[in-house]
Length: 286
Length: 335
Image (cartoon, rainbow over all chains, first blue to last red; front, top):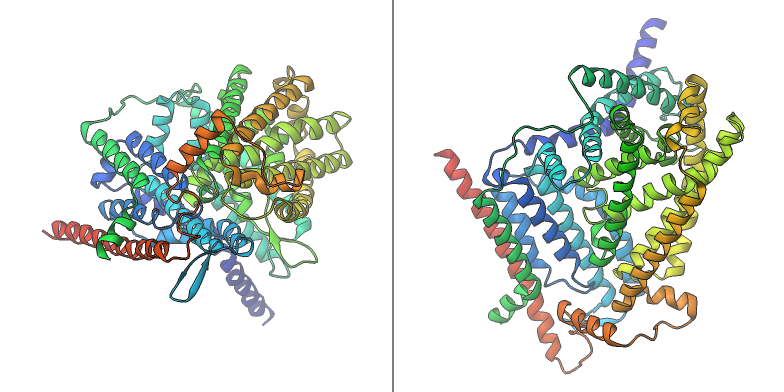
């Protein structure tokens, strides 16, 4: 009987730590989701990585160059994510999930504007709108647009291709290698950590996660395991002729389509920067 | 304390990116010069991934019931040395920005500076290393780790305040912002410092050579404190000049902090550059000095309303465009 009770207890703990493990797994799957998306072959995916990188930079810089009371002028910029996501057949759901990560800090700054900036800017239909509210909406809008732009770039471009472009831009190869290797090993080490975590949870008497006093040993163990792994990785790389450089044989040149994409979209972005499309449309309507 | 793109102005983002890129370039050069790159690359890569995994593990903070996780700057510096640690943190932050929307593309410069620079190039060489040079033991490791983590985080948090205010996006007064950020990060720093100490002590007990190598490491032999300090001094001056230049161009950015310092909100700024810059700003800003406020005659009300109507129409249009593209694509596929 005590045996069975023991099993039930262990099973119970497994379920308990299963909840906590979700966090691990969602992070792993979240990352592979974006990587999966980047394997597609739509017209946006086929564009040269460099043209997409430059366009994204132009877009982000333009969006954040608006002052803090801009809303109507920012709204047309929503065309960029909408059109690109439809063309690249990217689903919205994973993006919104990530938006939740980015929002809190921006929201905090935005809310402080509502509190401190109480000047009334306009009264519409008897409701007075303060400058703080306007800037709050503007900050949230900017957050959404910038987060989406970066996620679109990553879900239509493979990290390895982007990394190769970085080396062509004369970014030191050690940094680029560092980037790609870290990326590659995140899921490996997350699995390692999650195995250790499960083991810890099953052995622990309460189910409240890792105790503060065990944190040093736990993370220290993880470090030693990581270092051992690194050693093995190094030996394996050395066996395959690694000499500290990032080698790639063929380099794709920017084709005409990509030039057209980059210049076309960038100029549209800049036009929208100086002409308020919303106002134009609104005045036509009225 | 990740800065977001939405809270930055292009000028602040650009300046901080330039500073971080410079520091990254120098670190890459140092790692390469010391001939460490080949062997360090896999270790750095895997350790970067380690930071990710470690950040996923929440621990319960005793007495509070809340949980926290580590940042890892000092830990990496202690085990890898400052230059490789800086490169590693940068890679972690870049991946966080690109794949997890934690921080932004343009905010990367700020984030690398806030979280990497201060722990790797200020707290580690000026606090952590000197203490451990006196002798590596549990007591010294604990003091060094806690002190350097707290100080690194305090600098980082203060730098977040300055960058946000200089961007002029938030209305938060300087004093309130500082009073909010510094104590929070003091608490975070204390907890993180204790954990860092525990981890480093554990690693030291298991593999003493790892810590000994990086503290007395041959890689760091040629860096004197003087050099670090003078580089810092130059950086401070450069940052100060650039920030003040641009602060006068965008007066609303630093005005609150000025109020706190000098008692007046406005710096007396005039002259050719200032005038032309503000004229440029008027042209660039779509609502120059909040054009749709002030007048009570209702003419501006009209502009505001048409703006809102236009924005709603634009949203609708964007939606229609998106749906139709998807529909067309689907139709093509079905064929």
